[in-house]
Image (tube, rainbow over all chains, first blue to last red):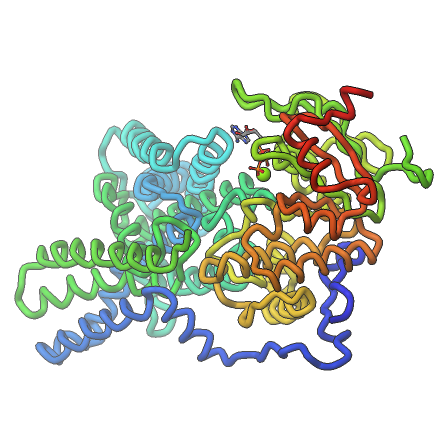
Length: 364
Length: 259
Ligand SMILES: Nc1ncnc2c1ncn2[C@@H]1O[C@H](COP(=O)(O)OP(=O)(O)OP(=O)(O)O)[C@@H](O)[C@H]1O
Ligand SMILES: [Mg+2]
């Protein structure tokens, strides 16, 4: 028992380990990455849901090995998952703060609408924009991302500073962004997407990997590192776990929440750009349930709706389970509607297990 | 205002008023703490001790009144303002993030970052924090074997240990402890009392809130009594007895009104 750790000049508590004369301190052993990975997987529902995904893949592979594992199908599965994955990545941060973002699909739509309108305007009209160069395309990309970021900031400011519940705020902006998109377009989808953009991003590949998939993978890995290794991620968990504790620890909770919703908005904007490039048109009426898709993916992946708990790896699995199910069901000749039935059941089961886990460990 | 040795207070609260709707939690409450002393703040349930604590640590704002730190008026506009002055608090509700581990809680808001570029990118030095937090737990005699276990999975006493370790690790001037031994066993209580003494020996001021009069008499240098949102008495510990303290808390004795 030597002196207490001190914090000279805010340098952080000095590590008293070095001052222990008798070496009584149990040295914290550096754990292997595998051990930590196993522990974190076991501690959440992630491991079980990962096994479920493996089981689904195994079942379909046995039923129809040739079709299911063909590279065409794997490619389709990944492309179908790309946009949903990007939305779900943002949603993971939001739900870990104990929030929710219902506006993602509408922000996606509006970002696409603004992006293509800007591309057309900068290219000098609808007829010219098909052959537009990278200049107008880049301006459109920035505009689309800006719209997403802007909506995210609006969500975050209203939620954190005006203290309106996130469910209501994002339900409101869900309607507003979609309504404004309809107003801007008269409800009619806009084509005129520059070919350079759609062929490079929408249908292009980098080597064997489709560009969409590459972008989604890079975003997911970067966001996973942000969530699990940085201070930004730590604050995200802390706020979801106990926002008052975070506030008393000196964390600027409002600012952090604004950043988290801004991130979700920005990623929705990115999703809008990818969708625009892939379909070569806006898809105004196709995204009403994107929010629910993303929320179920996050929750199925083991992130708790009550905040404070979750993992990016789980979200990835949660995105792939429905997509793999849909592809697999079609291949084995069942109606793909069964996918919705199964996802509904899996979602309820996931939340049930989260509740059980919470009850088991909550002490008076 | 100086004490008998001619030392000026490190913290002085004057005429603090705080109401919650119809409840007057603090009605012109005063409080004084001198450098390097252990001052106990006692009073019945609802006397306003925790409210005063939160005002001094910047968590809530008073409706009226003045707060002085080292003789200068200060605006405790946020918990960060109190932190910057070297004041740390163990709150009655502990204010821990239950899903984070003990080390993360000790470092919450003041995370250790990796050296170099990674640190600039905000990457946490988790191993460094774990090692240092484990050291702090050992130093405090807090029985937490695994600094990376979620706080929610710890016992009530262990959680209290995490909160005490957090405050003791960061305080440079003052530690306020709002019933830090409430959930503790005999041995752990003795540990915390030892922590209080050691922190004091390091030159820090300790404000201890406790309902346990024998503990208060054992560890405090001075005692201030709050009753119905007002300071009613102050004692040097040599002049205090359990009877006197209880009398002051229940209203049988009111020095300040008499004076
Ligand atoms: N957030 C709040 N909202 C409404 N009333 C409050 C709030 N916080 C405290 N009070 C009231 O203020 C008064 C003082 O409360 P406080 O928690 O400061 O007492 P205390 O001295 O710490 O009591 P205890 O020994 O039980 O912890 C009580 O009457 C309490 O009901
Ligand atoms: Mg209290």
